[in-house]
Length: 302
Image (cartoon, rainbow, N blue to C red; front, top):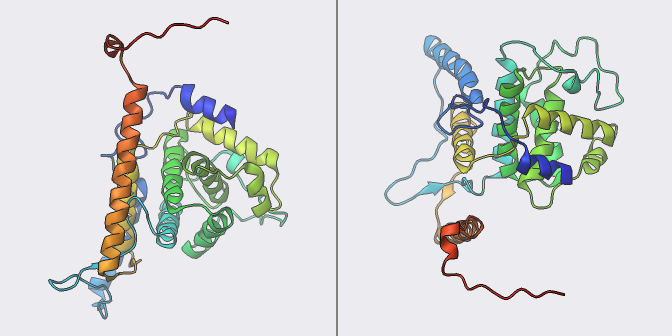
């Protein structure tokens, strides 16, 4: 783990992190949302041609007397809804991929996750959304990971595809997703899940395989594991747009007095947290110009 943090703080990132890369720049459009738009447009066109009725409206809208709100915020996303959206984004990545470019370290035939024999035509069949969701949900549930970790996982996944110039496809999607989750859990969560812990979840994989995959993943990311707040927020709201386009509704409930007080408390807590972080950053970046008025203490030699 010490090696992991050495690369995080000291290894430089190349000029590949350009403004066109959504995982690095907040103004660049996320890849998954762009890939999903083709299916969304075709679905809407088909419904229009076939005169398909949207059916009974199930979405709730706020009025002057009642405000409907879900329990997902950018600072505290709903875990179940976030995993559904992230796995749907992965599904669109696989379904609408440009090619089948891959690397051996992520190939499930070369590095199987289970002892079950991998079929010869394993690379031909795209997984459906439910299959991807079950795989990710199992990992998040067993490792007790957070919804924020799921969003960072998607950021790392798109960064890998861009930096390494590969595609996520039927032959490699499980290992790429596993590698992204592995890194995201170490960077985001204070109490990180160790590689050996994942071997308890995926009982047929070895620690050596996990370590090798993590090392390759970091190298392909050029050790750039930084996720700016603006990039994180962009991915969160684009995932909400993806949910809206695919009728993955967030559970809406009337805003009660108790929920309003809870949201206010969370907002105040986050505000205090960011103030503390800002003060800490100021202390760390104390410039030489401010040293004039500092009293010098006598050195004690022993």
